[in-house]
Amino acid sequence: MKPAAFDYFAPKSIDEALALLAEHGYDAKPLAGGQSLVPTMNFRLAQPAVLVDLNGIDELFFIREKGDGLRIGAMTRQRTVERSPLVQHRAPLIHETMPHIAHPQIRNRGTFGGSLAHADPASELPVLAVTLSARMRVLSSRGERWVNAKDFYIDLFATDLQPDELLVEIDIPAPPARTGWAFDEVSRRRGDYAMAGAAATVTLDDDGAIAAARLVYLSVGDFPTEAFQAEAALIGEQPTPAALRAAAEIAAAQDITPGSDIHASAAYRRHLARVLAERVLARAVERAKER
Amino acid sequence: MDYPITLTVNSTAYSRSVEPRLLLSDFLRHDLELTGTHVGCEHGVCGACTVLLDGAPVRSCLVFAIQANGRQVMTVEGLASGPKPEQMHPLQTGFWEAHGLQCGYCTPGILMSIVPFLEENPDPSEAEIREALSGNLCRCTGYQKIVEAVQVGARLMREESK
Image 1 (spheres, rainbow over the protein chains, first blue to last red):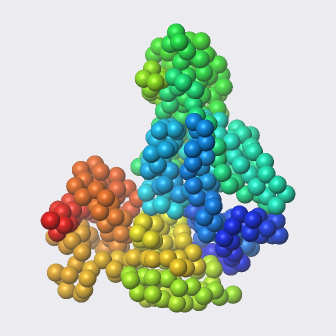
Image 2: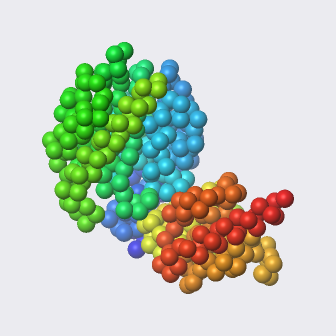
Image 3: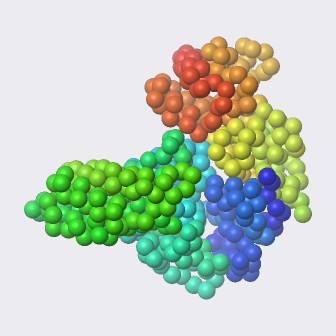
């Protein structure tokens, strides 16, 4: 259980990193926090010929205000995001979710962008990105492009990133007024990968009815799974317990096709999906009322 | 192909030549013969390999030694001020007094996770201690005595800081 040999580069700038990725293409893997990549290398499930270590690129580590929203550098440590007052105030859904990600020792090295780019179906940050309508800033030696989070996740462990591209920054827009949020997940032990998890945002109009809703799951599919029919059922409704329960039932029955594995059966995931949806929608509604 | 690195481990500077794929855990154990850091799973789950990297607890099995170039590392060997029992770190004393270990395999990783935790949370509740321990697996103790050991260690640290 030791990694195969590789060539190693430690660029000090984004441009240097992009040049290396352009040169080596499919042979190269960027190394961010390493909390997902290095285990796969230790098992030799991954054997990149070249590692481009991003940890020395200071310009990728930041949390900045952008209008009423945020810009987070891709290499920002998860622990930094967890402790950031700026994130707490401008993206409270992220603040609530961070302690659910693995353990502090993992979050001390793991990065915000690394988790987003790795696209583990059981990970929390991709679900938050979709829920919050985040936008990913992607650079290569060929130029710059922005990708909406919902277009970024295309398959199991697969994002829209090309081999010569780097995720460098994530834009988190400010939520509309009267928007509440919530996250919850169920795992066997604290810090384990969750068997199912859900993030929700709910926006209320002046009459207290639901003007907008987002409900996105982790671990019920190959990538973040948005419960579109449940969301549609909520629009225009007063956020009564019955309405939220009905939406949760739609989400679990119609919006997801969970799989079975050694951690949980499909039926149990469906059950969790219904329970979690009701829970996060209710909490999001409470918080929307306070705003 | 070997790369030169220089790093500080337990306040001593070391210069060595390493293959990029050499894990920090193996570097500490084999190149520096600091075998207090243990290897349990090599995929970041068990916590036995936990060390401090620039003061923060991390899985040394998930860091390449080459990435520690220019950095400060502290291992369990860096906790005590000397070899005598009274020179142990107060948290180590807590583990001794409360019998917080059996085989001891998980213990260094727990000490390196809990020392920074207690420095930030000098008077934690039992729930907070259990939460802080959740990234370290122990097969022997059932965690009960580990929790007690942390409570004793925390009290000793509070007394020492007065």
